[in-house]
Structures are given as structure tokens and as C-alpha cells.
Amino acid sequence: MAKNGKLRKLSGGKVTILKLKNRKGYAAICLNNLTEGKTPQQAFERLYHPLRRMGFELSGAAPKTR
Image (cartoon, rainbow, N blue to C red; front, side, top):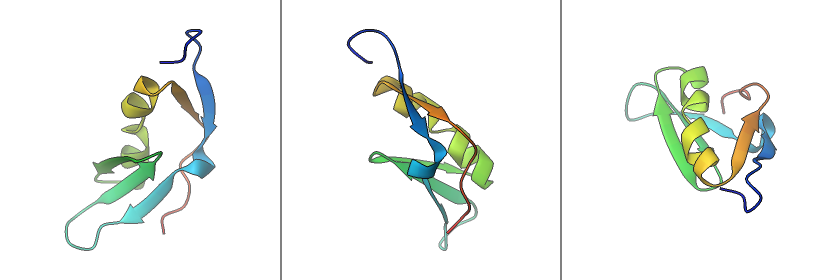
């Protein structure tokens, strides 16, 4: 968490969403955090907790899948 207790904003553009080839679903990667989900939106939403532990708040919409 941030030293002053406030979370820093992080735009959705910093997130990379990939289609997993060896299994069903998608992966979202941001600041060395990896999450998986059945849909790109679910993978994006699952980044909320690891980024919050690092002191960041995710804002914006999920980027397009690569």
C-alpha cells in the first residue's frame, strides 16, 4: 500500500491482455502480476487485488486482446 494511504491511479492501457493458446481463456499482465479469466474482462477485473496490494488503483476499461 502507498505510504500515505492513498492509491495511485493506473490506466487500463498499462495492462496487456493475451489469448492463452494452450488452454481456454485469457491472461492479463500488469506490473509483473498475471491473472487469468474465461473472458478478457474477467482477467482484467482480477488484477484489482494484486495491484491494490502494491498501492495502485486500476481505472479505465480493459484494453483490446493481443
